Amino acid sequence: MEPDEWDRATDWKELLRAVPAPINVRKMQLLIVAICRRVPADVTEPEVIECLDVVERFADGTDTKDAFECAINRLAYINYAMMFTDTIALQRGFR
Image (tube, rainbow, N blue to C red; front, side, top):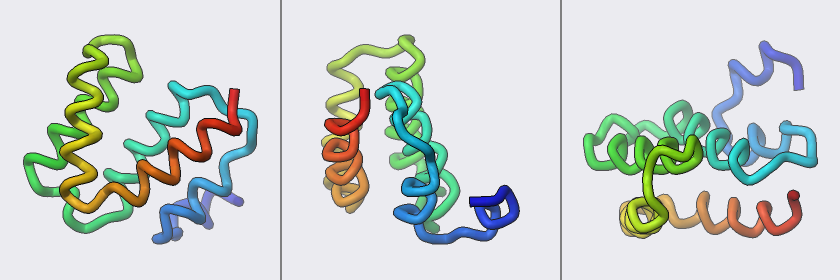
């Protein structure tokens, strides 16, 4: 995918598929946060932003696993389950 195609993309699955493998778990987590901030319209909700911040901090090593798991559970409750479920499945194939 060319940079201009990336900029125009609105489907998060398309963006995720455009990333060359292999990719490590940390980069995958940061990629998912970036896509979440970019594609869905409801990322302006403060609760969603805070959860994404926690996931990003965990990927950077500055937040706890408990906080990460709580954020993932909360995002799932807020209808982000599909993206993160797919991400977990994808992570199993990446090293």
